[in-house]
Image 1 (tube, rainbow, N blue to C red):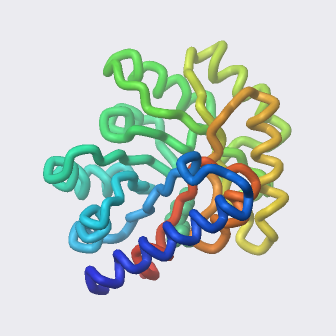
Image 2 (tube, rainbow, N blue to C red):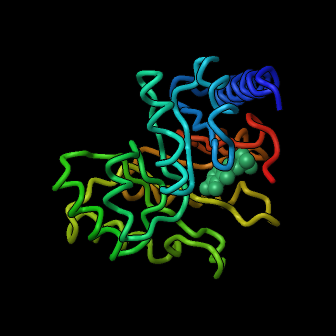
Image 3 (tube, protein in one colour):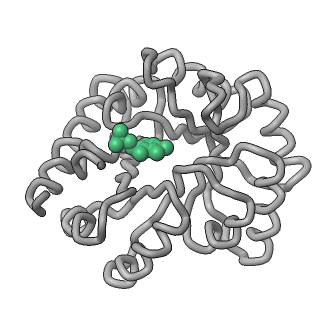
Length: 223
Ligand SMILES: *Cc1c(COP(=O)(O)O)cnc(C)c1O
């Protein structure tokens, strides 16, 4: 992959986001593009930074720790979001490195995050992940458990939750999953919705996404 291809992918995604916002009657400033750089080396990320992108997503703490400190030192203003599952024993590193965590999904993780947030005085945005398709192999809170979980996040662990995240089943139309996530967020007073990937971010924007997580449409295919 060349530098040119990367920024072309970025330009295309930006234009598609703008178009989806227009179609939905939404303000483009209300939808943030999280450029998902997992598996890609610094050389593939640098041209996307050079093209002005500042918000990136990674799905593994260790990979992010290896890649991002140098990139962040070189360019001020970069924000990093953790979009993959988080083990409680990595909560310390995650709170230190990330500006948002999209995968809050169980009490033990809430407890670990709460402790680190207090200790480090950092306050990453927190999204609860909802397993809208109730897929056994997938992380996330079941839809029917979401209200109780969100209450516990606040009341038991003192966490300020900002939004919800979902990853619809690969073999289903994503719309109903986005709509369900938006509905759960609304009744729990949460404003942010992390939903939509390369294949379906326009649908997600139509249903209220505030953060779209787009990887391959920007960086190319992963191996
Ligand atoms: C990899 C990943 C993405 C990006 O997927 P693409 O299809 O490459 O856009 C989004 N969200 C999560 C949670 C991911 O793991």
